[in-house]
Image (cartoon, rainbow, N blue to C red):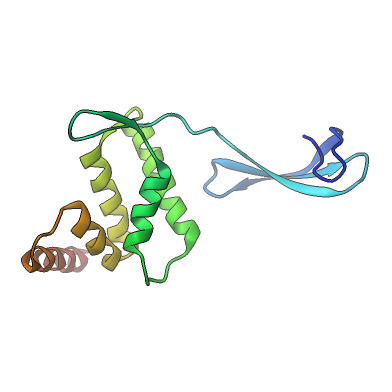
Length: 154
């Protein structure tokens, strides 16, 4: 690993630890030339995930698109950034594990809704209103009743 301070390639690993959800390793390194220390994070390259749209088109999974949709539903809500990242990591892992990296857009939307339901009920309703194309007040009221009923069962 090249030293970010002096540019030399003579560096060594001083310490390694599991990082984030266990899919990454954080390494503390030291340059043998300038003796300065720096951190690196090693992560598995994302395996390709494809989304099959309603019209049959296939597009590459766009983590940022999912992220933006979730963040829009969380506007003016209190949340921890890395929890959103963990939520998306779980969705990606689920798709790779249970769907061989191919998922239809409806199932992906349902997965996001399930994660949001456990994370923030208001965000769940906001996301559902866009995802399910609510056109009237009854759609909102029915979803709120559904959330209340599911919450009581927990």
